[in-house]
Length: 148
Image 1 (cartoon, rainbow, N blue to C red):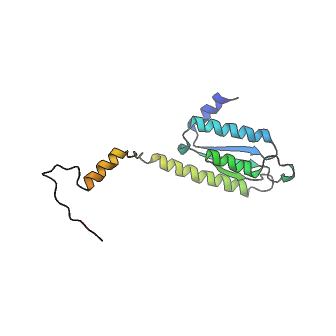
Image 2 (cartoon, rainbow, N blue to C red):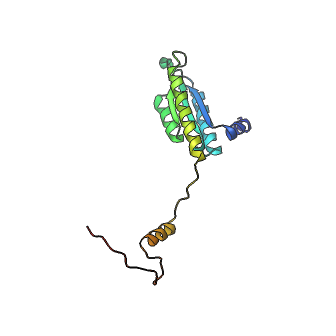
């Protein structure tokens, strides 16, 4: 489709809003495609994504169920809102403010140093050092024990 153009935007963006219409299955399928592309090209912990179902006011013509949107958002680990931009802006505003809060949190986390996970050997060395099993025999002192 438009992978090259999409990839250029993915590289610099900190947040994404994927909008689909609840009365149009092809727009929902396109949203699924875009979420899949995002997950391929970006690390999930480095950006925030909002899946937004629009035209909630047209419930009589609904094709995409609310559950389908929720399942898609759970699969890709993104926020999900279903709104009606035609009826009022409160739902849209709430969704965007939530996305902004998450984006700021991700940016703050990105600035923190990455902590290395300890392997089994490292953990056993640390515990051995704490409990005196790694010290040489002449340096080893008998530690007092506490029994409760």
